[in-house]
Image (tube, rainbow, N blue to C red; front, side):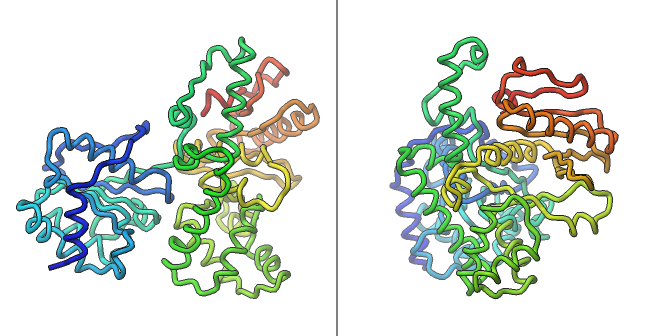
Length: 428
């Protein structure tokens, strides 16, 4: 008898689901008897994966009993030492407590259990049970999924709220058709968008009063550092890890050498290979992504500085050591995530004279689209520089699809004929 499992199952039977605010993306709970596939929901901690499970469960409970729809959270503090035996005992314990096998299993943060994927494969092969799994590690993504689940799992990626969802959570609405016509509507949009950009879009933060948002973001950061990185990868040098993360949050470009020298200058001696490992661990937690230069030579990509983007703009605000908000960098971070949702291969471009374009979309090895991102185009010198770099890059890369993304109105200035203006409110 597994006492912990039995306790969790008895609690689940009586537990009330929390209030659920729907997201644009929802789980498919229709029977998959022919395909026998698990659904794996991946994403950064606190993006709303658990609530996505709750929403699916709430829908199922209209036609199924609690005994048929079972939820287990493997981050429960009472599960002191997660072992495969916990999974091996799960279905027998459900039968013992509920008198029947489950029809649906919702397993939250399953990556903490060793060899979880082998157990999932066995259940898919031997039982008529639909399985839904969440994980806060890229090791559960479709690219890194264990061999036994290749071709046996759907991946659903969950991100922080998009702007439409943000408005829904705030119980606000914006008439985008009136933005160019009604001053009050424009002012309200900018007020809401400023909050979205400054404090980010993690659901819990969006629902928290403004004066508590920064404190909550810092608490989330501590949890990610401790649980998703330090404990998962058994990092003993917490000071080096935390300092490295703060360096990253205050950097637009990074190289291993530059990070190594910065850490060394403040008395933290770690090798370059250790820094490289830490960066891979941080990326694995979905906290950060690195963007490589657009270059036909892989060697060049590795030699050039990489740009860094974070899962949520709020962390850049809450943990930055700078005294003023860098709205341009926050805005670029937001656009990066919008683009990477829609495109697999994204790079940045920079020529030998320093002309830079924020994002280059590659298709079949060729540059298909270029995006220049500029939060504020009111300064003529800045506008000219950004456009000049975009047009030069287009010629160099033989790309005719040139785009400028900004919050500004397009009628405030004249653009070259080859450049298309994209308003951020529409783009997002």
